[in-house]
Length: 70
Image (cartoon, rainbow, N blue to C red; front, side):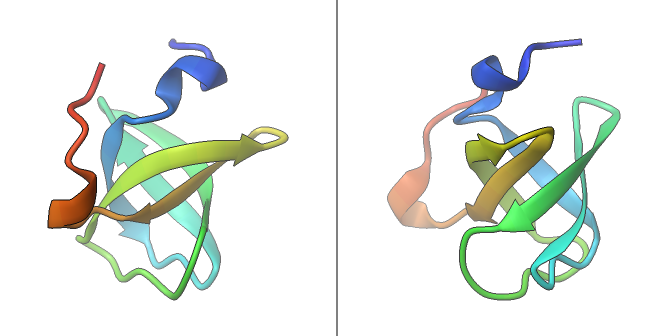
């Protein structure tokens, strides 16, 4: 399992809607996550932008933030 600090910039998919908290999947692992903005629905692609404790902070992946996964 990767350390949380190495997760920044990694892409994942929403498993449970982020409103603002929910579950995402990255590399076949489930993570608790918080949306850095609005609600993000199941199936949407997200990118990790930080962390709060053991939760990842994510935002919806858009053309403007296409940093590749580590």
